[in-house]
Length: 271
Length: 352
Image 1 (cartoon, helix red, strand yellow):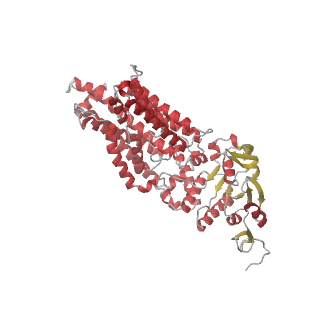
Image 2 (cartoon, chains in turn orange, red):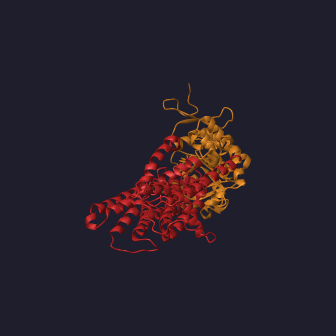
Image 3 (cartoon, one colour):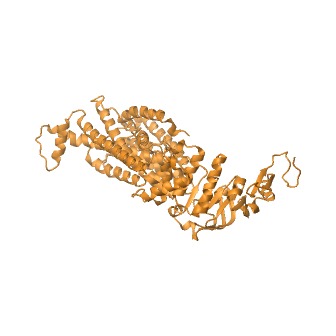
């Protein structure tokens, strides 16, 4: 369980500013979804939170400590990141891949210990892939690979888990499975989760708190019901949508309106 | 968990097999050559070097001189060259995440070759630690080339892998052009083309133990440092970003791995010239047998590389005896078909 605070954080790549004056506090044990169009700064925000990018201005505190002053290794012992995609050029098997998550804990000459092996097995079980342990990573399906990467991050025993589009390129079965697992990790292990999400409906269903970014600024921050509204989505995405309650959970559900169909206003007549 | 002892045993048996192969290669390569020395005689001569033994001399004095002063330094030199090149190959393939990478990919080979060629032209006759000007210049040239490539590729505190590969390619091409130019005007420079050619094709030129005394600590030290960073190399196979998420100080480790790989390569080319295929093929072969874990890959590749070069150098000496053919021809003739075989057998390995 870790909390993360960004104060007045700005960041620019050499070709332009990506984030402006971000103030964001994520408390220990929260599960936060980052929403926003492509290029709105979600991935950059995650990279800043993981410490591999340094803010141009402002400061980021992890459990009260200035992230800039913590060594990479110490950060990796408490913050795990699941990037959008990994390309693995070598034929590691799943067990070896997940063992890579132990890297920040393994001492240079001692090698892996029984503790490390136990943590790896637990991580494989939590990700639901213990039976894949001896399989080669590069022969797995996209959904299975994503679960291996999840297991690898769990092997880091993180207090904060950062996920960049964890459901991208996955079929709906795997989308749901990954998010279910992440949510139960959040609820049962108390792992703080921040995830960049593209799919508004999945975000609405699985996250307690959503942060909406537009052009590098936070434009909304609150519960799904507060953030996923027709006017807010129109403002940020400029796409006509309707928001209706999910038939079962009641969470806001976004219905996309193709051009030419009835517009997004709730009171407009539908066929 | 069950897989742990099984893998340990497999690893132990592969390492033992390779070590046994190296011992065998050592004796074979010591026995054969222009003069054949019998294996029992070699054993007796070696044992006589220890204080407790005193076998009667059943051999000629010349044989003892050949064995200890000419052949053994060369065999040990070959083993060091092979171990260094194979280790450097593992380091560069792991760091660059590129299966086509070899110890020469970032300019070491052309830097060494240019250094050696310039040394052949210079009218200087010097020796340092038992080395003539040519190996010293080759060593310095290899390191200088990497230094240039690294700095060319460096932008804003970072050295992206792709820039480094491109810079390596361009610098190599430029240096190769200079070598070709020097060879083209060899008459004016008084340059012996055969010497250049011999360097380019690879030739173990160890002239005594004094060179081994310098090269051996470099190579063995390099392999030990490489092995200490093996688990970092494993993390690097996820890419630089992935490695950073696992707590690796990417730029620092990159410099360290590059430095160790380049030193190993420079040490190898200074006494062996540009022996090809060892650094490319040996890591692949071992990876197919033991898997990609660098903690096993590094020591096993070093041993395999040593066996390969010792045997190739033996063939180079005896195939057309008394004419010696460049050892690089042997490593290519064996290495290229072997590499193709590995690729075909394991096409999936490098599929994207």
